[in-house]
Length: 414
Image 1: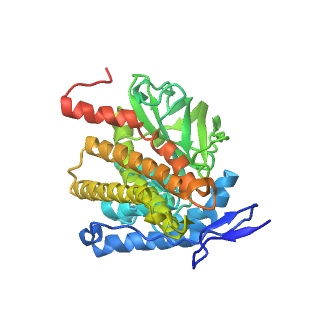
Image 2 (image 1 turned 120 degrees about the vertical axis):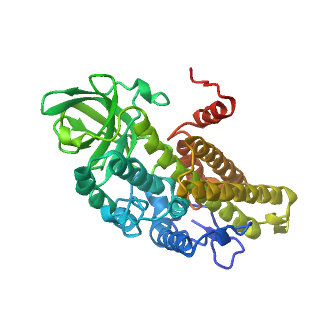
Image 3 (image 1 turned 90 degrees about the vertical axis):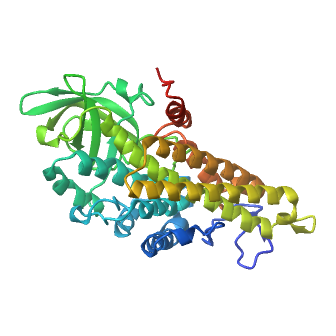
């Protein structure tokens, strides 16, 4: 086995004649071409920088190994809780950090810079489990679950998508039947992040009147199982599974009293989509930063490939798109902090930024050449992860039609 190291003072770009396991140094430097930092408060920058430092120390050194093994690094849960990544916008009285939404977005950006699966775990816990309990739950439910979820003592998942109902959740087949002092839950959900290890599940089901209701199902309830989904090419360092309910007895105190109808789960998805719009920027930044450093060090025809026009075109276009996405999210966060944001604005940002990140990943992979497909660099992992991110929480096409509906006043779904 031989190892050739390219001209690089920090020896960060190895090429292999054989296979050799290495620890990739995290040399990431965040691009900020338009001085977006000047738009941020000191607290927002502190949240971002502390999250970035945690990712560099805890995530980057191990994430490639866990991705190759298709295993979620459960030991990171305590760390995610310690940096406040679980429900950072939840008020402090319920265990959250009480942060504003730009701080939350920046935190998701840094987590996804590490890996989409790590950001997904935090997004599900905060936006899809803690948010509905806080927004629609009873005071008893808030006090019972939120502090423990914030500390990572228990983990949650979100059950909406079904085998036959993804983009049309209103057609869900999962049912709850009133049985006197409790409900009986039957049905199945799939493509559920965190499901294999979650302690509770926020589940959406139709009642006897055909109205969509939210509820909390707990692991250990008879008839509730969560088989893991295997053989994924994407989000390999994230745990995905199903939720199967076979005559599960749900206490009536586990039903959300504050919402009926599809607006409940859609409100949750809006919160998650907001975080995704920021998170995708992190993945794009990591791909750009990797490609830029590689291009400066990779010598071909006697000079760095960064000197070639086509390589500079790729890098300049990557930075342009990242800058546009940064400004889009900053404005989106400002509107959300002012409680003025619309679901349609969130859809536009989610759709644009994920597609942007995926395109940048593909361009970065070409800059790296054959090395771009290896686990020695994060690019291919980000690309494969983003193939899921562009689909979940509303597909690329669905978000396009949401914008189309908004600007024309014509609903293309009907």
